[in-house]
Amino acid sequence: MSLRDNLQCDAAQALHMREPAEIGINGLVSEAILIMQGKVSGCVIVTKDHIPVGILTERDILTKVLAGALPGNTPIENVMTHSVDVIREGSSVGAIIKRMHEGGFRHMPIVDHSGHLQGVVSVKRIVEYLVEHFPSAVFNLPPDPAQRQLSREGA
Image (tube, rainbow, N blue to C red; front, side, top):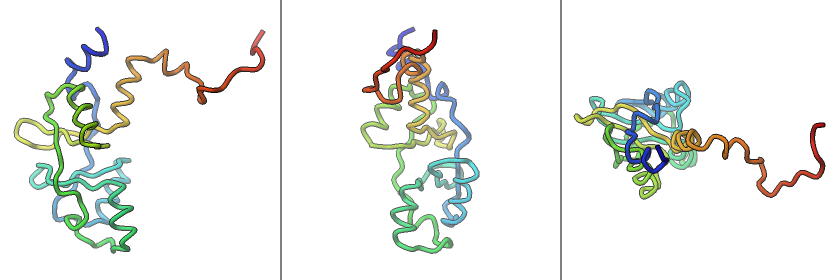
């Protein structure tokens, strides 16, 4: 099957998402940071009854919390991005990539038919998915494409 076919046929589950970093709407910034560290995640999805209502990213923490010198007990609702786009879990990988590209998103929550949070897709996971389709091309690239070998290695 070609990559084009896979992008159209593979659903979000093919991206092997990890359990999402999630915090309730009444959480604090300090709690969100601890959750992100514990899950080794670049974002935390803010939920109300497990339905996404916002997102807090590393960039939000840098630009809003640290740059604004806000204390750790700041309510997450004051610094999160309120309008969060979501993807339904049956959506194709191609549709996810298109939506992330058009919106300029690095992370997108995946929800079930009821709107409940199921996972998060990151740009990193999309790249890993694409690498799985071109392993020999990707793994054989030199670290610097302009690099040229001056002498022969080996026997």
